[in-house]
Image 1: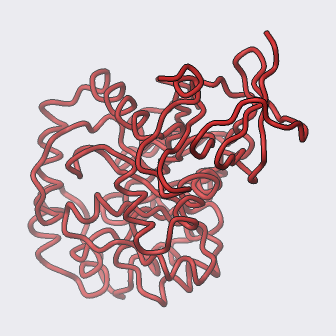
Image 2 (image 1 turned 135 degrees about the vertical axis):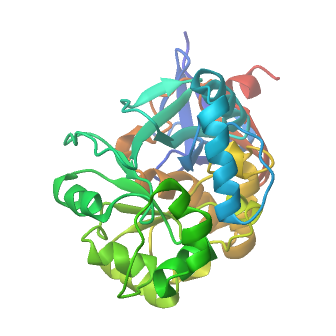
Length: 350
């Protein structure tokens, strides 16, 4: 098959902006500076990175205070959980909104995989059962208030890869750690036999640091209740953050201080969380929410190479070597992307 040289309104190859790319046998390759023989409208890129998802939690729940909502979620998991149904459906909806890479919080260890044309990196979540830690594995201790702290300290000694942890997600959680919020314990944690956190009272970020778990491998998810002092600590530790704006708003929680992250140069990505904590599983909603705070240039970076860096994708995040069916064309005004198509559909005139 003849090589086709593609030009576009903009082409981001995963690392940098380029003028053209080559398509040979249906696979994207560097064009080596060759001029385009076919031009398309839109921004061509490897696809969005949804840095934090729960693909298996495709449930419809009503919004509400976090400690009440999470109990309804637990009830759904006990009675209606069906990963074989939820994961393909979640992936399809994410694919339709331009996602091609996902950092998924998983209930069993899984290797990196390609499913529904989406690259899935699984972070194996644990709460009360400590897993066998492998040097190559990616993990997610659920949170400071659900995982025993001796587990977290042990994990800090044994873990060798990037890990995700839900942190400073709700005001209730923050108040629980900073001043012993009795409602959060009595109405939620005590019902599930979780240990009470005692003095000295510290912010969730400070507690994580005290446990030896705040460092370059740490990916802090949500962070809506993190203070400026907390962010300074995150910056010094070299940790990363994932903002989940639509999920946080659904539950009445604050959104991560995106300007504070930008000002401090803290690496961050964007996540949808699960369908259980939002009205629609549409990454573009989160993308526009982030852009509304920091602008589209910063949002595009966070949703692409920034998110890829946060979850450790490395060279896997690239246009090159990808089939045209996986490559994404964003349509709109530059990186103010309102809808997406696959490159294969664009080339076919669909």
